[in-house]
Structures are given as C-alpha cells and as structure tokens.
Length: 140
Image (cartoon, rainbow, N blue to C red; front, side, top):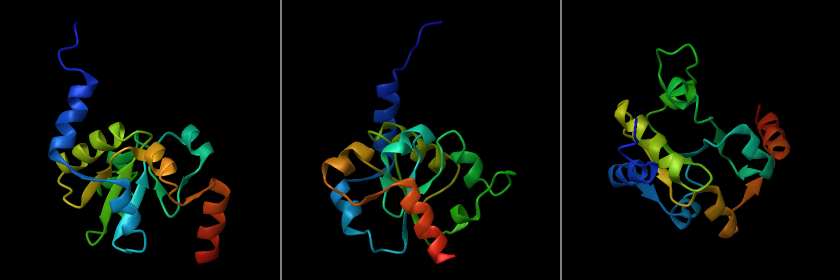
C-alpha cells in the first residue's frame, strides 16, 4: 500500500493547527510558573541533557499520561492552569504530539519550534539527568 501523505505533510498540518513558540519566546518565559516544558524525546536522547526545568514524558506514553481515565495518568497533566510546551529533537514530533493532545481536548498545549537542537544552538539553560534528579530531590 503506497503512502498517500508524507510525514512532512503531517507535520505541516499540525503546525498550522497548534500554537508554536520560538526558542526566544520560551526563554522569555522560563520563570513563568504557569508554563511547563515537556521533553517528549526518547529516553536515549536524554543522554545529551534536557532543558532546565523540563519534565520528561516519552512520546510513546504522552496520550496515556494525559488521559485521566488511563491507568498511566500523571496528575501533572491535569493542571488546567499550566500551559504545556512540548519539545523534541527538531520540533517535528512535538508538533504532532501537540496536535494529538489538542485532538484529545487539551487547549493548554503548544510546542517549541526547532526543539532541543534550536535550544542548544541558542545557548538555552540545560541540565543533565543527574542534575535534574538532584534538583527534584532537593525540592521534595
């Protein structure tokens, strides 16, 4: 069976339907407690680090973590006062994921154009997984 729609077409459709922020937009809001960055990259990609303050929600589990009726639901995603800004490696998966969450009924979701690569190129603050674990343990 031939592919009738390319992955780039799916990404373009998603970008046309979701809120997209630039790295500069997100950096300007880093102190905003109403914004929650969500790293949807595969766990193997996190070896390079993540955005400071981001939570990890693997792309393969995202819809299940968001759905309050799912046995995998994470209460963080039920906070309607937060805006969840998704990012991935380049901004393609995050656009598709933001569209999927919108299709589920979420209105407080967006994605970051350019993803992790653009963040690093713009010298945005990062942390290793070890630093993230230590920061979270200190808050607990």
